[in-house]
View 1 (cartoon, rainbow, N blue to C red):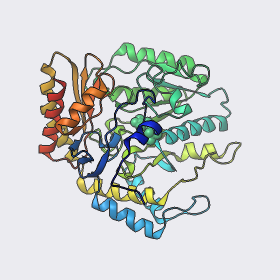
View 2 (view 1 turned 60 degrees about the vertical axis):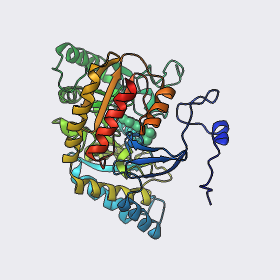
View 3 (view 1 turned 60 degrees about the horizontal axis):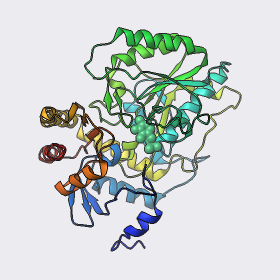
View 4 (view 1 turned 135 degrees about the vertical axis):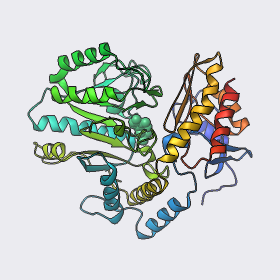
Length: 425
Ligand SMILES: *Cc1c(COP(=O)(O)O)cnc(C)c1O
C-alpha cells in the first residue's frame, strides 16, 4: 500500500524527472495531499483554487462522485481486456456518444492512450491514405508556426520549430513545411496577404504534402493564441483544391473549452481527421482518439497493408472508455451555457489587467483566459506567489493563463482572476 503519510521530497528531487524540468537545478514541486472539486490541497496546508484543470483535463473537478462511481463500477466488470478480437460495453457506449456530437461524416473512431499518440495515428493514417491512392510523393506535412501537437517524434516535427527545439533534433526529425501562424485574434479581419501566401505555399508543395495539421481556432501550448475561424474555412477549400487531407488537433480545444463542443464548430467545415484527448476522461486517466471519415478509413484499408497499421496494448481501455462515457454525460447534463458564463466573468475580471504596464495583451475565449506579459516571467517565483495567495496557476514564457474547471462557481472564478492579477502586479 502507498504510504500517504509521507512524501519524501528528497527522493523526488534526486530521482524523479518532472515535465520539462532540469535534473541539475529542478524547480520546486509542491506535494499534494488530495484534490477535491475545484481545490488542490497541499501537504503543507494550503488550499488552492485550481486554474489549470490539470492541463485542460479535469473539467468536472477532482474526486467527482459520478466519475468515481463510473470507475468503481467498471473495475468490477473488468479493468482491461485486449481490444484485438474483443470488444465491450464502454468502448461501444463511447462510440455511440461521440457519434452524436462529432461533426457529420466523422464516423470511424480509433482509440489510443494519449494525445501525442492520437497525433501519430492521424499522421500515419494520412500517409497510408496517400500511399493507397498511389500518391507516393505525398509524405510530408504542412502546419502553421506556434502550434503544439505533443512530444513524440512525428508529433514533435509539426510543433513550432523554436519552442519545439527543432535545432537540437536537426536532421533526425522529419522535415515538414511551416507557414506563419494566423494573425491573432478571434475577431481580427481576414488578412488577404496571409491567405495569398498560404495558397502559394500549399500549391507549390502540394505534390509532397499528405496532410495539413493544425489546432483549430486556439493554439494552446505553442502560445495560447486565438485566430479567426474563417482562416479554417479558407484552408479547407485550399486542401480540397490541392488534394491534401486536413487534420484538426482538438486535443486541447475539445469538450466545450472554446465555448462550442468542438472548436471545429466555430467553422463551416469538417476536417478529414480529428484528434481528441485531454478532457476526454474528465481528467481521470490518459486516453485519446483519432476519428476520420469512412472514405479515408476505407481508402487506408484498401491499400497494400489491408488495414491500418497501429494497435496499442491498452487500446480501448475499458476504464478510460467508461470514464469518458460518464464525463460526456456530465457535460451534456451541464450544457455549454456554463462556458459562456465563465467567458463573461473572465472578460470582466481579466480586463482589469490591461491597465498594468507589464501586460502586453489580455484575451478570453470560452473557458480560456490569457494574460500575455511584455517580458518572460520567472516561473518559480510567480508559482510560489500564486501558491501563497491560494491559487494554482502555472505560467510559461510570457503567458499567465487559466483554463478553469467547468464546476467552478462565479465567486471562485472571480477570486481566481483577481488573485492572478494581484500577483502579476
Ligand atoms: C496536450 C496536447 C497534445 C499531446 O497530448 P498528450 O496527452 O500530452 O500526449 C497534442 N496536441 C495538443 C493540441 C495538445 O494540447
